[in-house]
Length: 94
Length: 457
Image (cartoon, rainbow over all chains, first blue to last red):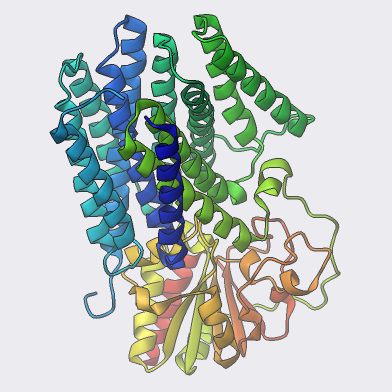
């Protein structure tokens, strides 16, 4: 990938992440940490690509573990975040 | 970058867009749940799109790994108790770091000719991914109680620095001697994984939330870097957004504890001396008196700490709150940023008990109100209400922002025993004239107060 273009993506993504968190109330910090944890679970896509092009047994074994770990990151991150956020209620709907 | 069909690229693009929308939604309690669901669809879309890559091999293996990892985490995530949430987040995060390191490992094993910048980023991503992986596992073990003690090596800091330098040196060798020999790759990963363990082992439980948050940011960066190596913008965006967000979150937490991140990593929390002598005595109180004091107050502020969560008293406390409110008492909850084992953890625990979030206030919102409160009820919290943090320069917690519970007319402390808090520091608040101690486990104690309140009608 064009290195300079990637640098722009890095810069903009870093700014986006900073801006989103800067406004978050403290009460959401735990679900948010867990939610951002879920989002980097997208690493599973990268692991799938690698396993999908693995051509030795060693690469397949590492790839298999990488996909399993990435999938666990994504699935687990989603479940616990959703569970926590489902509990946040205002007085009227409690 | 290999040229991929538009539907694959499109799925990734939409996935990345949904992640950002989802995270944005998570920034307010009202839309937070919708946010995570949106991000969830983004993830499914990105994974589905990846299956459509033309010429993808080992599809059965991929599906099996997805099913195994996904279902194991799904089930454990459904079961985990809310008090155990921090270590669960830690372990899921570590797995992501491990996956990022795995991507780099395969990349190096393939030995394809990559540009210098790409190789360096692959190596850096692998290093921080591996550290995050083992470090998070240690963090999990500590919070889960599997590892009880903080193990400190002699010359710990020197060992940390040397290990880090060795890892970087091996990584550098890998970059410049590409394609690297398998032994070199193996040594690099072994040292990186060991580094994560050694760095995390001596860190105490009180600092663990900051460490988990830091590793979360690490994994984000590792994912972003490996995304660059793979030429996949969706990974770059998701990873870097999380890396930046996690870094900020880590700083916010460290600030709330008044502990620079470098201190957390490199110096253990120790009392730097006995501190100022505390005058006065601790005065006890009965549950009946506590009930009466709150029943006839006009404003009560409750300060819950981790002790309340450990005692599973939050449901009782909320029941007590409801009774007080029905009697016309204004009740608010004051949460210190580091209450619980993660910032915001206490909010989750109160939410689980059914406490509406508009009754919960953070330090800056509520500190001015303690002066008008008749009673400050402190349940299982200690260091976060210690006035020594304001006044005693010799105290190890000096400078940490605290909840000004001592400014309330009366202070009631529910506490298991006379011991000190997590930091091991004596609490001057307990010795002040307007403070009364209620010794006992938070849950039965709250139950007793409820009985007395009901009797008062």
